[in-house]
Length: 69
Image 1: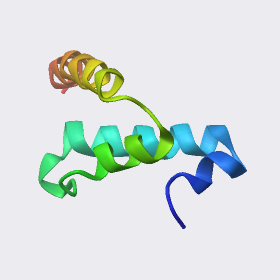
Image 2: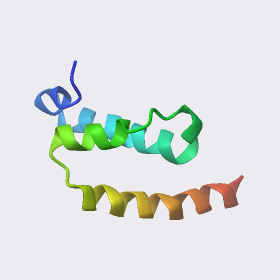
Image 3: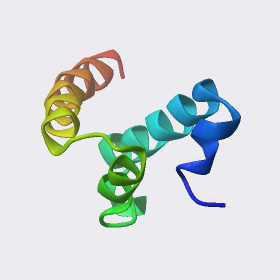
Image 4: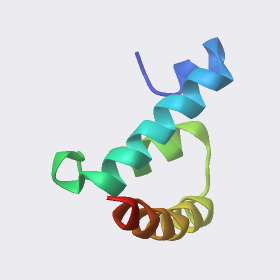
């Protein structure tokens, strides 16, 4: 199944899976397949600027998570 096919089935499933890719990239980058997030974003038609903004916010979330540990 291609990533874009999730959107045809359920927008919620697409958002959940995309969020999972972000979480892996943010919290466990050693387990992240290089380019997986960018490829999924391109398949969904998300522009690079939007993905870059979310990645910037992920840095803030990472700081909060580490503070809670």
